[in-house]
Image 1 (cartoon, rainbow, N blue to C red):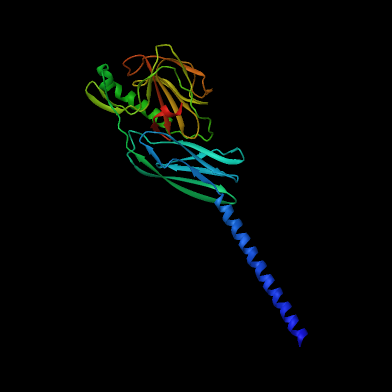
Image 2: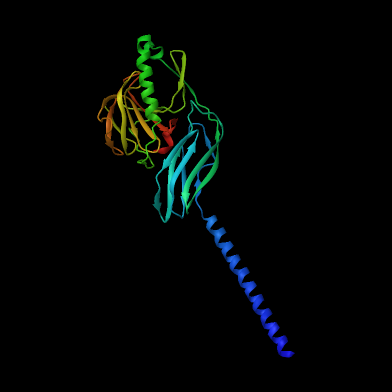
Length: 301
């Protein structure tokens, strides 16, 4: 009888040992899974910005990323992925347009493929209002109120520009900081509410640099020249596609040194400044478009 009791106790110990082992194993697996989930990709982006200001958005993960797509203000862009300091990263410049966007909370959505499945992250960005000054300008009347015979040309050029600034090419070529195109001071900041000969016009959707006629104009980042021509309002102008929906423009030039389709490097001279188009004096107008939204580039140099 004593032996029987001893064997029963031994069996009970074995059963308890197996149960404890299973519990510990399950706990370890749970901790491992939770740890893995905790280390998944995350959006690194501001929660608050102001109207017209650009901001950098990054998706960072310890795991390989692919098929990264960003959705912002009804636009979408597919991003390149790079391995930096042991982590995978995709980045994008985003922003709002002083002309087309109002204050409010806007949802940023990032969809990506990681560890065998697609994931979706959401991030709210609060866009706060920003006040801009009013600027009154005197220009030739044909520039304030274009004659009828110029309207067809203006519409044709406007469509060319719209198509250009809304281009989203797949390869990212830009890096921060951007190259300042000329060394002159800013004479007219982004966002100014402009009045031409007493008639209200669109807000200023770029920045004006002081530049004497013939000053070399440098490209802000690597890219492909997507549009170059002589426009009614912009005068001689160059637009450069830097990839992933980032487009820079250079207006009122006296000479253009590049051709459409040409690859240009950051800091390369692409034109000479001037006073062509609707301009009250020699200067360079520099604009930056992010997914078609004209933003204030001043903080990116």
